[in-house]
Length: 499
Ligand SMILES: [Zn+2]
Image (cartoon, rainbow, N blue to C red; front, side, top):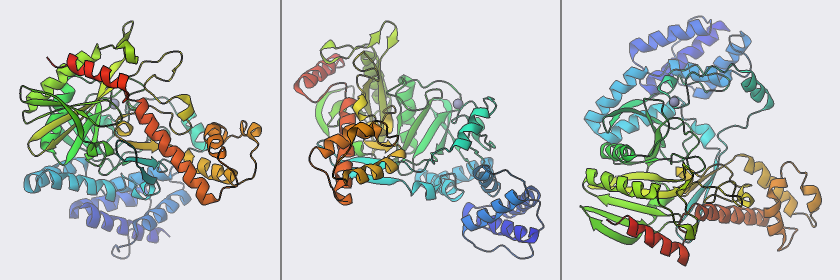
């Protein structure tokens, strides 16, 4: 048995050599670490090429049997194993910069991406379970993903999290201290995390791939300092510095206010990757003006986007900073845009930078997070009748037309399909249904045109409903709606940013 474990270790180390570029000395070193960790005898044969998951499952079973780990620790342990056969954090940085010098930016990011996939930091088998489709809308196609890659937590896990000691190290999921972190009940293990340094506008930042990969080559760029998200003039300069170095990627920042921002406001960070998000296909609908070598345009997109472009990086950043300064204090009661309530600010932007040829461009999605009595969740936010589809804040990815919907929807849609197949629905009892109560509005609207639907028809009607809701959510985020009043208000704002 122990010998067999030694053989599995040999297979894992061979995988490290073949797929992760583990060198001769590091391979021997890793073998010895693994033998100690797994209390195993050295192999009696050379490593063989075997499916990685079979090797890992064998090693995890052994660790459970020997009580090296407890039940529930499997994923953390797997991460530890993969971390041991991945080149060290420092060596990956060196290899990355070698690649950058020899092959250029794309070749360097390809290297980091390959390592992150091959060492299972990005768990492709989980991500491939996501359900994805596209929906056509009046201002372009949007993408919709039901996110099944984050497994639902079971009660045992929830209890473990509640009982976990509240030691806050690393301070958050984006802190530098995550590299090599062993993980806790509430914080994922990060022995497989590999990152590379960047200098952005004179500051020290790092780049990594997102383990969730909501779109192709989804990257996260984060400040070395744990400091709150803030969209400032520095943000525009940093985004442009990045796309200057990596023009095959875009980079954008979430807004720096709740409701309109992302899920992490405590650590300054950006998101980027391949330019595959739906908004990139939208065209400019209007040129506002050209000044100081920069062009200011409006994008033909669902929400309100002001774009600044030009070949002079500094001039583009400076114009964005100027527009932001105006927007921060801009109010137009005719469309419900109020910049402040007392001292509390509501206006911010979601900026996205790209470089095409010699042209730098920043798309600024104007955002406002004000709430009032009629809209306790946000005036420019989906209303309660859409929360069955999406309740969370509408961050940069959704605002750009890619919806990441909760995994619970898969089960809920199946239940709704079954229900719509019936001849009659008892709506009163649905109120108490733990799965379907939240979808009452959707079910009633579909049932209004008839019941006894085949599974195929019911599914189509539900998907149509989800698509329409996502398009409606995007419209909700527009501070200037695309009706006459909204367009007039938008024109007034353009006037205010024209000097
Ligand atoms: Zn942090």
